Amino acid sequence: MDFSGEYTTFKREELMQKVQMHMSERRFKHVLGVEETAIALAAKYGASEEKASIAALTHDYAKERPNEEFEMIILRDGYDQDLLNYGNAIWHGLVGASMVQRELGINDEEILEAIRLHTTGGAKMSLLDKIIYVADYIEPGRDFPGVKEARELALVDLDEAVAYETKHTLQHLIEKEQKIYPKTIETYNYWVVGKAAQINP
Amino acid sequence: MDFSGEYTTFKREELMQKVQMHMSERRFKHVLGVEETAIALAAKYGASEEKASIAALTHDYAKERPNEEFEMIILRDGYDQDLLNYGNAIWHGLVGASMVQRELGINDEEILEAIRLHTTGGAKMSLLDKIIYVADYIEPGRDFPGVKEARELALVDLDEAVAYETKHTLQHLIEKEQKIYPKTIETYNYWVVGKAAQINP
Image 1 (cartoon, chains in turn cyan, red):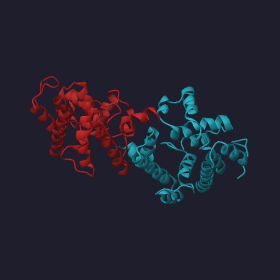
Image 2 (cartoon, rainbow over the protein chains, first blue to last red):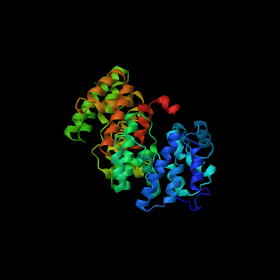
Image 3 (cartoon, each protein chain N blue to C red):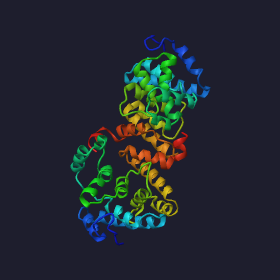
Image 4 (cartoon, rainbow over the protein chains, first blue to last red):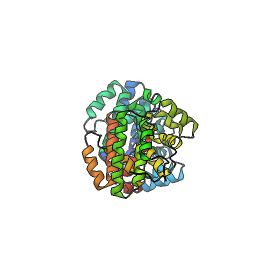
């Protein structure tokens, strides 16, 4: 895919290199899998394939940064200080988007928001947000019980795939007794329990 | 059990009658089961058996009130308006405590807080809060997979019983795709994931 120059001054190969420099080979392979999947979903659901490519390539850009760097940014840049109670799993998207913006010069708000939400999702998600959230879950390198069903859903109904991913991610976190970020519950209440239930509890 | 008159002007039999008037026979039987269990836990863990009795007898006092009454109180009395997005399951404790206070004249803050938290728990829970939360889950009338283990834990370690109940309640809600109140996640993050993880994510 050739980039138009509208969202980043880098060519795709250059952006790939920038990203690759910041992560293990294994993670970079995951990133390329997410990109491939995100582009396919964008084509299917009528989103910008270029934005899907850029957001996918950069979604884990900050994943291997040290905790101290995230903590410094959270303290400095007006984030909710409750974020300090979480860790890399939450920070690399929510805070990592600011590193993508500052260091890679990507200023498109839709791309940045898709990076922010790629782990937790949100009650409000754009088409691009959903594509990155789901692509991260079902890219070809993923292998866990249920991934086949998630892939099938993603081809039929993206919202159902968001719901499936959210429910199963939550179940996995609880099974493993891992911390849950409150925004994940917003995502669950909206996409799994449903919009009707939001209005008529 | 005879009441001292310190927390309510009613005798136990009078309080039981007041409560019974507001609910089905089936629910009143549950209330008596919670009371019996709460008194036993209070005796075991060194809490006031009288407070345990009063909190248990009144914890579901508001459970059969109409939604409209809760909504009116939430709108009027300075509650977080996000509460309107939930339903009776959350309201009957969190908001019901104010009905217990107003209508039954129970002003003891520790009792009222135990009523407020009996469904969702909280990161901060007093001994009485834990007793009512757990007693509600394991009273003799309860019958669900895991209740035996919960009863055994409650006799050994009340905090472990709080954690067990919280984890399994969340799993049940997600399995049934029912709405989750954010405070339940605070309870989970604190009591299931643990205090160490709170500090060092």
